Image (cartoon, rainbow, N blue to C red; front, top):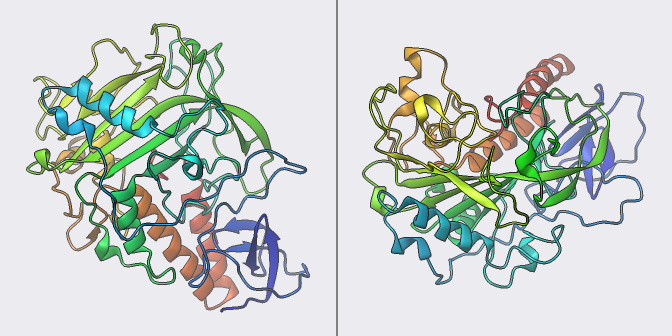
Length: 433
């Protein structure tokens, strides 16, 4: 196992250190050259160890729950119900997305909000987390494994919203998706991107939480609330390595779901949907996990659509009235960048990493193609089959390898500057998704 000049303990992980200014990167912590720490070996995110849960230390004297990455990926997926198959995603969109949500909720919601969506407690079916989401300034916090997402700017969530608010998320894959994650990462020190094809019946789901107040976003009243160890100032959208953290309440805002469905294989092979808590602005009052409404469903990117003709591969729920959706009326959730769409964003999942968000103007057209499952966004790259969590994980792994292999201090310094700039970008603005 590789050793380094000095090391420092970060939370549950013992991580390597190099002689540079303080910073945190997956697999290593950088400390000042004057730091003195006994030489030890890395205990997670190495070729011979489990993946890290989080590299962020727990708050002092923390006695609450702690996130544990579910990485016991199965060799084969057990037989399981697929209730969405009873509905046609092209004509029965509301029923389809409701069936997917019910499937995701089974065994995951429980009387304790804090204990909900803990895969280790689900007795109905197993859900799994993708590894290597612990990297950099957006990496997993240690209580619920939330990663930093795109910042919601004033009026993006609600007309009452006067402030920018930070958002955080955690993603899950069902057993078919877990099989693929396990295959890609079977060798922790040498992942095989060529095995990234997701099988039929894969479901990916993501919970997105916001620091936004009920005063500025009234429909969040009654939303399930988690404690998260995140940037102490909920309006600070550009945290640095030394930015203080605090345990803050974060409210459920959005739920994303994606299903590998062969009935749309001629388009993308995937059906994507998103929900908003409370039905969005003007939605009905309620509380608890079930008080969500679908924003919409999409199974294609409507190539050539300019906004003048009706969308034929996107369904938007007429009962939900968000301040924005996606580009030219395509589907996107409340946190997402309105210059993109659910499918266009995820179609860029590839290695080496592509450009996630389209530029303005005619150059955006390539982002709104119907790219079949298994086809890379850019020719000559390896498709990650619409899984940005796999794509991001591989990028983080490769970047950490480059850090370890930097030939000298100057090269390491230059690399760190690039890593800092990339990892500091809010998610879904071109950073983590």
